[in-house]
Length: 106
Image (cartoon, rainbow, N blue to C red):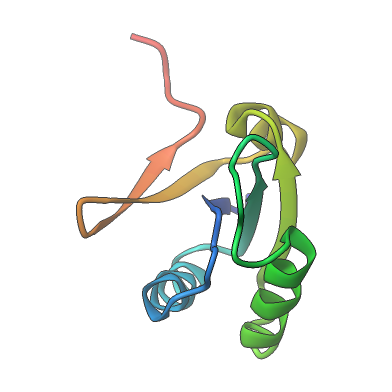
């Protein structure tokens, strides 16, 4: 059976309980969940460095075996292609949305 990998991108600056809630829900829905911490060099004055955010998320999700924390810079779609993504998780107006990255063409 094909494993389904999803990605949850964001700046996570700072990590909130809402972020952790989505991570816990996502890891139950998918075989593998990648939490992708965005690096934005154009954004002035982040509260935490990317490395600090990655370390915090790793510590907060250590008990979740199918969750991977990673950092990326540039376009999200390029990162998705790089990790051969099959699902995209994001938050839209207080709702969790799972978007198929590979949709059949009409």
